[in-house]
Each structure stands twice: as structure tokens, then as C-alpha cells.
Length: 198
Image 1: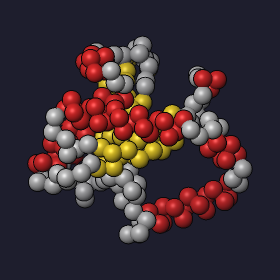
Image 2: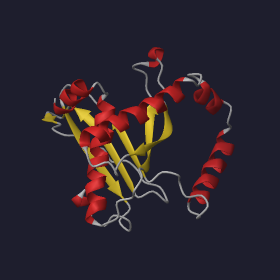
Image 3: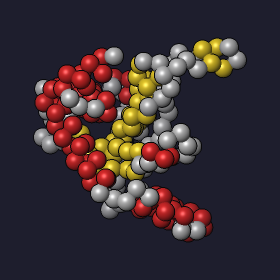
């Protein structure tokens, strides 16, 4: 409800608010270490490429986009507006692509070639030249808004566990469930040994 109030008050999206809140948390952590950069960090933000016809279907249909994470902006409202503008630009770039482009390309890649390419990509990512261009991942996943049960026990929260790869220090995955947001934080312990502070 708080996120939706902010969304309505400032004419932005829920995702804009979530990304801006994450930027504020990372900002406080960086200040604690006297490591706040003058410019924005770069976040990898998965966006859905699911078409209206694919609503309710299974499987991931996402595209990974890089977007600025405005940790250098102290004022939360100014940070939210900058985030809204940046993510809006990202959506416009995405909408210029044919909806089926990536999905169709995947159908033409033989599994053996894909596996070789994936191994090569991760090997490159571990080298200095192949470090990812982003500092962290932020993913906002809409979840069910009705209670879920398992063997009669009600699920009260859903803290997602996502993944970090070589060269990436932090993954923040947020999932909505029954009117609240659950933040799942995964970090490289060498880069962030005190994740609990975040």
C-alpha cells in the first residue's frame, strides 16, 4: 500500500519505486564505507517481454537491460524521478524491438552450441576484460496476491533466492505477495561480508 501511494502521488510505476528504494538502501551501505561514487551505479534490470497473448503462460520471457542506479542522489523524490525517467527510456528502447526477436532467435540455436556459448561467456566474465558492465541486479517479480498453502500451512512471506555470477556483487530480487513486498538479498561475501546491514 505504501509503494502504491508513492506511485500514485508521483505518477510513476511500482517498479520505479522499488528500484529507487533499492538505490536508497545501497546508497546508505556505500556511505557507511565512505565509498559512495559521484555518479550512478549500473544495475541490470530484467524486464518482461511477454506479449498480451502470452499472459498466463509458463516460462521466463525476459530481456536483461542495464539502467543507472542513482545512489549519488540524496533526495528520495529526486532519485525516484530520475529512476522513472531512466526506466522509461529503457522501456522505449525495448518497445522499438520486435516482440518475438529474442524468442525466435533462441529457437535457431542448437543446444550444443548454446551450451558452448554459455561456458565461453562465463569464462570471459571471470577475466578482467569480461567483467559485467553492471554492479548489481535488481529484479521486481509480481507474485500472487492471494494466500498460498502447503499441506494446510499458510505461506506468510516469499523471500526469493536468486543468483550472482562472477564479477557481480549483489542481487536484489523483490517479490510481491498478498499485499506486501519481500526482498531477497544475495551477495558475494568477499565484496559484501555484512549483507545484513543492507
